[in-house]
Length: 109
Length: 114
Image (cartoon, rainbow over all chains, first blue to last red; front, side, top):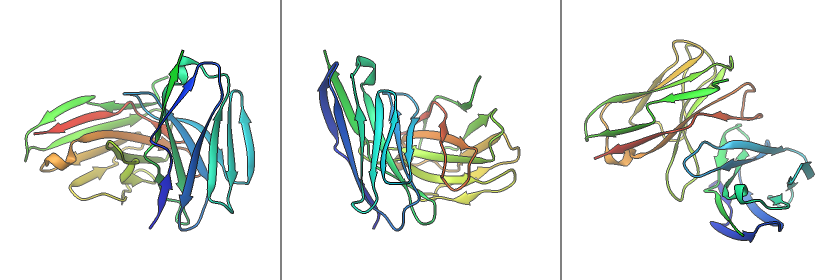
């Protein structure tokens, strides 16, 4: 079967750096997405990786290794507003999106 | 700049009742989707549409019907609601096909079936 694994919950300190991992086992691969979802709100797009390597967007970076079925989202200079769930999703060989259950990130002062 | 708008935001139904969720987008996107989100699970695709007048089944289509009579609107219907359909429903749209681009989500509709 197809599977996306990410930690259920993580805690980090304001101003620090946190890395949220995502491992996947899917039938084929056509890209990996990261979305941010604040409690009670809609998911919003953060990044899309289809080639190996690191993509940087301001304080957020996303890394992909297709051979390892692995990605991570790196958040730097954490702010209280970064408290949210982070969703990993993979587009499979049929271009269907397989979603992880999300990682709830708690930021402490 | 409305983006994707869902109505209603909240609804409580009794088992066996029917209802329709409306999704409207003003971005002229061809592709629209209905997802459900349940605690501890990833988003699951219910139905989707690749253009006006077309619909297709997703991962969990049973108990739901959809229609896309106008490009900007995508309706999700529950014919006979069941407690297992208690969930948060998200509509989304995209400009690129085949999940190769960003999804724009509505704010969600929280449905409780008693």
